[in-house]
Image (cartoon, rainbow, N blue to C red; front, side, top):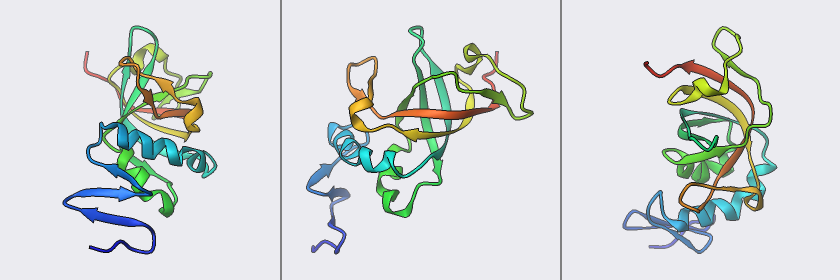
Amino acid sequence: MAGSSRGRLRILGAAVVAGLALTAVGSSAVAGTLSARADLLASSGPWTFEGKTDLHDSGALELKVRSIVGAPRQFDLVRRLLIGRDVLLVNTGVPIVDVNGRAVALSRLDKAIVRMRGMLLPAAQWRYDLDGEATPTVRPSRIVVLSFAAP
């Protein structure tokens, strides 16, 4: 099967993009593709991420990405690779509010559904997750809590 002019080739459900085989969402090949494109992504402007947060005892905040809006069409493959994956959030005094605009404490973000505007950092600035793997890292500019976890 021949690839298109964009260098994409589909073989039995696996996509080969820019010479890197992508076999599963959690694989290192996916991380390799994301990191290879991260510098371009960082310059593409902020995206809107939506998903469920997980606040770890260490203070690390992860987002299980459910949807991404605002990604340029050229990054559609990367957007699809990020959906369903955990990304780390770098908290730098970002405003966290509920849907009515009231401030929310960071401690209330555990298991909350949020919409976040932010930029994917270049691969050299990615943080390591609890397993010691480089994980896509987003610097949020605003976090809106859509719903809180049930007590």
